[in-house]
Length: 167
Image 1 (cartoon, rainbow, N blue to C red):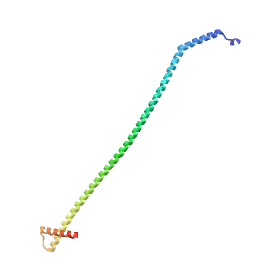
Image 2: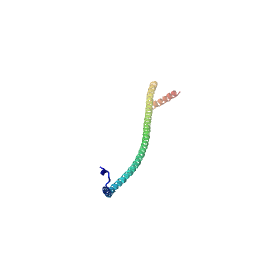
Image 3: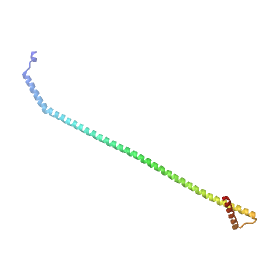
Image 4: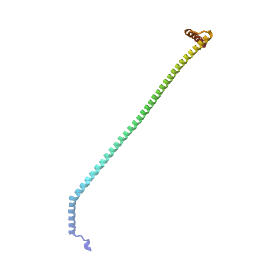
């Protein structure tokens, strides 16, 4: 059992030689490609981080641009609404003005019609008064008045009637 705890220098030498050969083989065939793969992965990760940072900056820039566009669209919408309200008010005023003009035209037409009807009624009344006056003259005088003479008498009576009415 003591032999197990005593070092065997030959075995130690060959173990060290095997380890060095294995280390050299690993360094030549495994560590080089492994380190190259790790370096490639590290540079890929660094590039991905840089791309993500750039993408984040780009997305922030796009976000700001979109916000500016939305603000611009909102401002344009408000302006369009104001323009539409002003146009609506203008149309309302135009319609009201047209309605007032039509109402004024109707009033003027009605006044003209009333004046025409009044004149017609006055002429009719004058004719009837003249006929009544001629009939009265005929009855009073007892003779048939000539058309011209009767018209003159009627005119004089109308004048007298107007003078009486004026007083």
